[in-house]
Image (cartoon, rainbow, N blue to C red; front, side):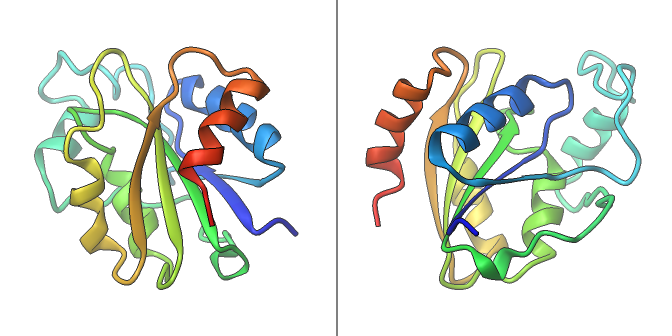
Length: 160
């Protein structure tokens, strides 16, 4: 088993494509963070203040339930954690995921997909959710997902 895990949440498939390419380039295992109740297109309508994603993101205590908790986090030293940027930060399900496991002593390198914004303060916001882990801002993977480009990024982002 690899010592690196690519764990990701993808609402529309964009982050899934990036995660799959990253796992392939890293020779890492892959784990999909799935909500217990899948998001519908209406849930993801950020223009509707009553949509599920809008309600969750406006409530910092919101913790959408996970479909499963079967990731074997203990087997990995490094977790490449991916998600779409929602409202300039990680979706609340990422908090649920981080609170569901023990990441003490792990290196967590963030990657994201975004329609236009960067990480903002995401790494700083997520660090208290997983005490004892090193949470590092990684890269927004909107462009080149070639194996060569991803390996080049990982040489600096995922150094031992």
